[in-house]
Length: 120
Length: 379
Image 1 (cartoon, chains in turn red, purple):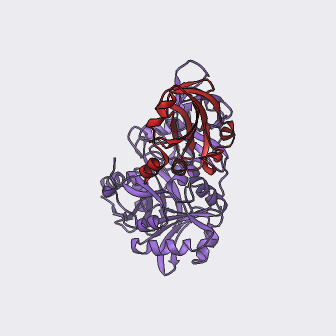
Image 2: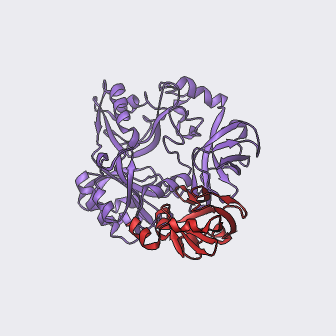
Image 3: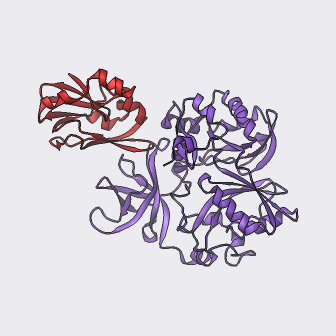
């Protein structure tokens, strides 16, 4: 199941674990990334709370947690090479995996059609 | 916050839109922040080939002495600035700054001796205040003529000379900080061999109604790419150059700002025309006594950019704030984060380790010699 947030994150949900990344639209808006900071494995995140930081040449931006949960895996590859987020945001540029506190909470998020409509 | 409707447009506004620029308000103008190439590639393209910047928002001002002698205009301007204007030869330009009574900086600028008048380029955000300052202080002996409607292009990078020389061979004969007037594609342009990127290049002043035509003509050369204000900022930061309002302001003296080089000996204590500018009673003694704080280069040890406003500490834990980062980001040519800021003089030696607070963590930085990327001016 693929879901989206108003903060331009995508979630691929398998069972009670969501893989989280930023959308193609977000990656384009941010421009070439030069730095990524990811949450610690084991960290408990709250929906809407700061989860990661991405920086372009010009500015730093926060990536928010799309749902409540615990970080169970992070993508070290994007820390080592932030340009992966620009080149493949929906794939190799994923950020972290979240074990959802309540996997039914994902139902309220947008599907791809709703997200596409939102960004126009 | 400016709304788009209130923003002024430069003569290149429609060209920016046509080129797909992402626009934003800057100093009251709707300006291109970046083009589809993006800040990173625009920056690198300027350093390896050439970039064209619209800097028409900056203020161009002419000063003519009522006596007709440019030296009288220069001596009058020296009442507002600590730099040697009267010693500037015809066809030469230098960096200067307006000081205030407290010894701080009201703006920085370029001033050229154009033979029968002076030509100033001041910051966009300060230009109306600068015009008022000049009129108030110099109107007894000078005519002050704002040219705020003229266009100004900056052509920067290793290919800049060759790009411009295709239309004006005169460009090849100029050296860094030379200023000349010549024809570019049928229009008289005032051209200086200067810029604010650390690269060789030119600033080209044009009538508003000819600016777009000349810009399009120059851009027809494939080596030249349009560059937005985003890359302009990262280029000037790598070059160690100050941004007014960030690295220098009404509280920073030129000595604190490490701009002593811009104040020639003739205006310093013991010089033939020592003092006589606002704040001289603070600024000149600082040449002897030094200052409590100094602007320095700061190189983060890690990969995280440290941006303007970050507080600086002497140690990794505890202690008081000892300074502030005034400009910071990622330097695409340096391939690393770069920054500048103010630190206590005792901690200003190259190699000194300091710590910056970034999102609650203290990140190690080293005081570093400026610039981060060596300049390539044609001297």
